[in-house]
Amino acid sequence: MIEPFFAYVRHSSNHCLVSVSTVVNILEQYLYVKKNVFGCAILLSLLALLTGCNQQTIEQVSGPTMGTSYQVKYIAGDSSVSQSEVAQRVDAVLADINQRMSTYIPTSELMQFNQAPTGEMFKLSNDIVTLVALSQEISEMSGGRYDVTVGPLVNLWGFGPDKRPTTIPSDEALAEAFDKVGYHHVKADKQASTLLKVKPVFVDLSSIAKGYAVDKVAEALDTMGINSYLVEVGGELKIKGEKAAGVPWRIGIEEPALGLRKASAAIEAPGKGIATSGDYRNYYEIDGQRFSHTINPLTGRPITHKLASVTVVHPSVAMADGLATMLMVVGYPEGMALAKEHDLAAYFIVKEGEGFASYPSPSFKTFLAPSTREE
Image (cartoon, rainbow, N blue to C red; front, side, top):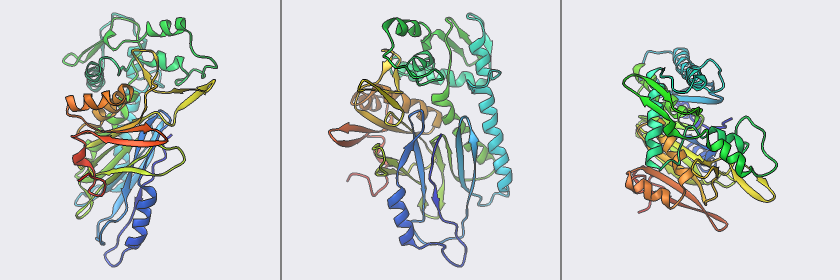
């Protein structure tokens, strides 16, 4: 369940409805990013007024989707599409994706593939096959530390539908779960739009599907002639245009300290997707030992490094979503080396002593807002 906060100001041509000092106070209080129950970061839009008044009105549509929620902020501009039409279009796009990719709907396309016999060439919609292929690119990039078939291990450690264990899983239980994991056991043919399982694995696209949903909603807004918007689904974001003349959409990244709303940085990334992954909200302890929901597919165990969260900026929100999850598994500083090698825009927040330290990759620094950019 996500808890996004969107501060925004509706203007009239005659007067401002709030003072600039009030808006600055809002910015100081709410510049942060929260996390959802899966540990994925939730990036929150700072839609407060930074400069004077204008006549543009920020519209909003929102609702439940994919086990979480969505919000869309946009400026209609020259578009003649009504707010209700925007809401209907967005709901239709999200419902279609959920119906095809959900692992909670037994009749979804993806679940039909998961339930199909091993060795059977299975025809699916092109976007599912494309997402599986995209996930495998990230898997290869990380040496297998990102894997959309990791579900059996996630369940074993109590972060899926199974109950949380009261003891650490045995080596025998780990071996049994490992036998059902391996992205390379799925063959994707984008040209034929088919998937083939060579072992009985279970594909779960939840670490990349919400980002893809943001991409598709953004495409829908583009076709409706809406050129300035912020789309958020389960914490994954895409922004385009400006929220007012000369005023960019600004996104805050929360320092991952429980109970605090402290900003680590603010970013401006027009035309880009933004996704965050972290491990500091969804975890449990057994005998004083902390177990994160983020599972390393190579070890079969929760991560234990000091990386608290990572934010990725990329033109594709689906790619940003998957990359953030992957880098969270890899950790720091190895994740930074990977980001530099592949020219990834990534922002790492690392636990150091009693606090946190942040490390932007070279490609990420261009997105830091002037107030938080290093000189």
